[in-house]
Image 1 (cartoon, rainbow, N blue to C red):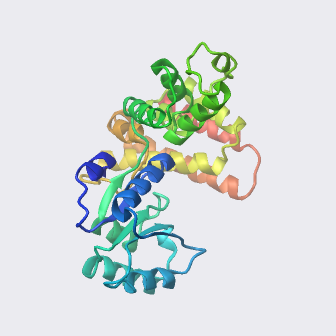
Image 2: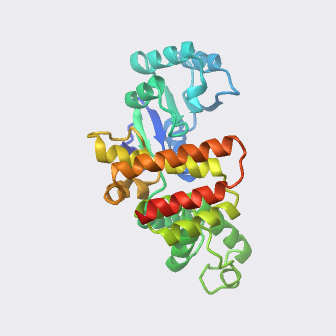
Length: 322
């Protein structure tokens, strides 16, 4: 998988430009698309957007086939590519493998990371994969500095670290908060001691990955604290159970199978990096018991039964105390 900087640094106008974006950071997604549009189209061509499930796959195939010597260049961006019909999937893969045009750039924004099938696997293994996962905090600081410099926003490094600490689930959240701060300050430098910073809500808003991280580390107090915070802030039971299941699948796979690679990917880099450490804290037998707990909770959710919060709390206690 290549980084955005690798793609841009080694950009060659005359090569095939087909990309599969892996990750869920919307700032990096928009940034990469804009960079390719700027470099590929220059001043001649069009950007075409497809959201499948709404747009027709036949239109996409026509756009691919209609290219000729006299056509201008196109950048085609596709979301929810997994929703196109099987017949169209076959035609699309055939184009990618056998007849890609240097006058068409295709950017596929990967669907939900839990979606895995032959079409998605073939597609992602055929074209250039680009990493648009939210970077580690140290790298995030550089991205924020790049953005603020491009917008002529003067901001202290301490304030950037503050926003990453409180809103760093993804770059978009951090940048959105900085934009609001900048608008309030009307162009004045942003610091931790200015009027807007002093008025910021001091209550800690946790992110979902932080819950999974503390669960993986078996930090009982923090896991329960963040679990209750997630509920207060509207995170659903289904979302929590799906995330825990995915985390445990990753841990179990790392303990019991070799070369699983990204078969069960977690898009957050911090979680991915810590899988081995989590695996050292859980036995395979314990994970099997927790899978049973998660199954029981899932049934309770589907049947709209009472006591789901209590059941999840007991599962967290069981996981972190053993």
